[in-house]
Length: 404
Image (cartoon, rainbow, N blue to C red; front, side, top):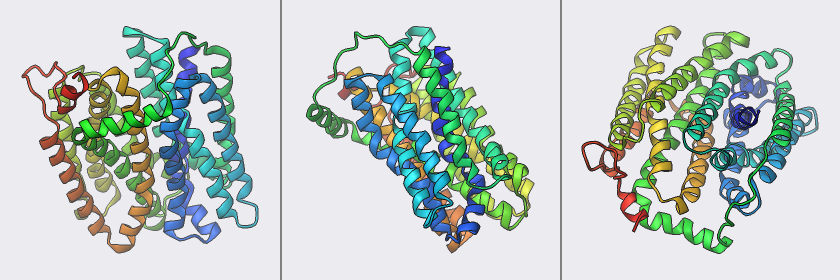
């Protein structure tokens, strides 16, 4: 039940954005919003989460994980209620944005802190197994969310917001009843020293951190941007909505989650293999996006798009492992918290940037993505260095600084 409680937490954070994707066109039509305004419903959630993740990470060290997770889940649920009821208030769009900001702040204290909680409660092989369940829950949320969002949207588009507090209530009860924390955790440094530690990480390890952060953020940016684009064209051009639309939106997510699971189970601690797979992943993404301009029929289009999902599925587990395994223990919390913020910012940037690109040119959008993923892949090739043929040694640039 402890594992079920921990596994429920990332599921909620994943649902926070993905479940809204199918109902955005209906929201746009009902409230008379522009493409840019409707994209901000995703963006404000992610920006709020990105800003607050490092702070709640520090607070969870200072007090306890459970004390942070429970209020965060409550705030997430309350934000959903406010957005749902606000859809029927005067100025509904403003109330929805306020509710989404509250949800983003709540999300900051969910999955990143649950990962730290797993490290506190489990050790060795058991810890790896629970972290695997943690990632599986995250993946399950990505796959189920567009289908669930489409089903709820059949009632009325804002009914999706009322699902959040119901789901949060289950997680709150599981965490409250079954999670018992250890009380002998070492206190963190004072806040000023914490901030200096963050600056020190970038001073000594900025080159490889920038590259790995950019790689992970790029995957989330392109994923949610493509889902935003796909949700729009399925209704406009293919006249597909409802559950069928949700099932189609789940296709790239299923491909990415399956690839991520298989990749994570095989890379071990081999940094050389991680780098090679990440480069292959960006090559596949570049190939996919540059080829999409030649396909208009839905099935060929989705087949080629799935290649980019394979690429993202290769990249994300490798980037996650590089970031968590290649820095010293005293800096790991700083680095992983910032990585969580970058992932949120990638999600935040996707819909508004894609909405502008869609207004400009669909072919131009795909070619721009191809150029961008090619550049990021080249940065991974040039700036993440691995020495030693076995790849088992912690050998990127950061490690020499981390253990000096």
